[in-house]
Amino acid sequence: MDTSKRIPERIIFPKGEKIENEHFTGTASLHVLVPDNNTFHCPVFNVAFEPGARNNWHKHPGGQILLVTGGRGYYQEESKKAQVIREGDVVTIPPDVKHWHGAAPDSWLAHIAISTNAQWGDAEWMEPVTDEEYTTLK
Amino acid sequence: MDTSKRIPERIIFPKGEKIENEHFTGTASLHVLVPDNNTFHCPVFNVAFEPGARNNWHKHPGGQILLVTGGRGYYQEESKKAQVIREGDVVTIPPDVKHWHGAAPDSWLAHIAISTNAQWGDAEWMEPVTDEEYTTLK
Image 1 (cartoon, helix red, strand yellow):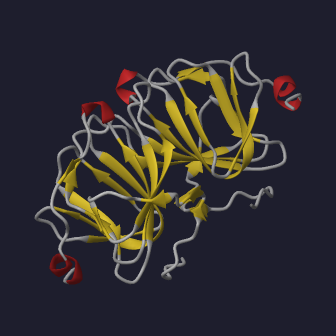
Image 2 (spheres, helix red, strand yellow):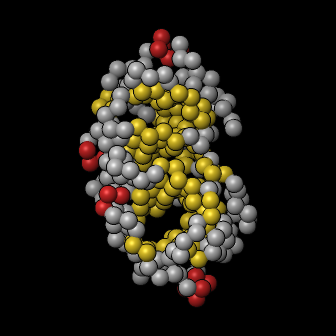
Image 3 (cartoon, rainbow over the protein chains, first blue to last red):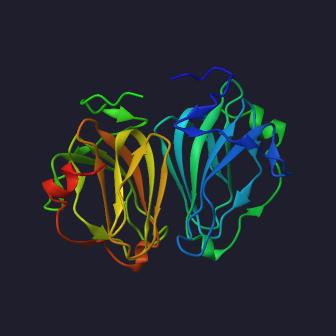
């Protein structure tokens, strides 16, 4: 498994375009595989994080499923220890559970993100994962 | 892209165990990534077809999304031409659309299958894709 610092342009699916919003620390990219719509209620994205990049703490009213396609990173739920995630891992995030995910400091991370029950509402974004929280992860 | 006749044991996710039911022609394998449940309403499977293998015509009451992870095969909706699908392709199958998918005669196929709106009911299985239909695909 290549966990060097350069994200491949494609791990089966394209890494996409740089995310330009305030909900991320560091550089992450997004490629829409299936847009949100009223037929499937299930948008699907490919997301790639550069080393050190992560999203803010957030919740999904309908939950989310992550399929990790490459690299190495972290998934953490509020009040729980962060868990290391790698290629082939599957993460199921129940509705309204506060969490974040992102790359390790020394590796990129790529995952497919499936927004389940999307008709129940958009993600609720909260505070960043501070450098202090992030750098003290075991 | 490796489209030889041997399915890899894993394309990011394990190819899984041989499917033993009457809804397939030829040999296909299944690995459950996310089981069906009342939290996500969104079971996710990894499916691998050996060359020549395909599923019967069928419908999903809640629709389905396919993320093609390797090989080469076909997706066909009733009354439409079959389309060739390959690594990186995304197929969105609306609710109640009669269709089938599977490998090409000379290549395996692997895809992730996302059952959307699973609370709307199980797949409705129909007749096999006959050898005549399959061998005359362009």
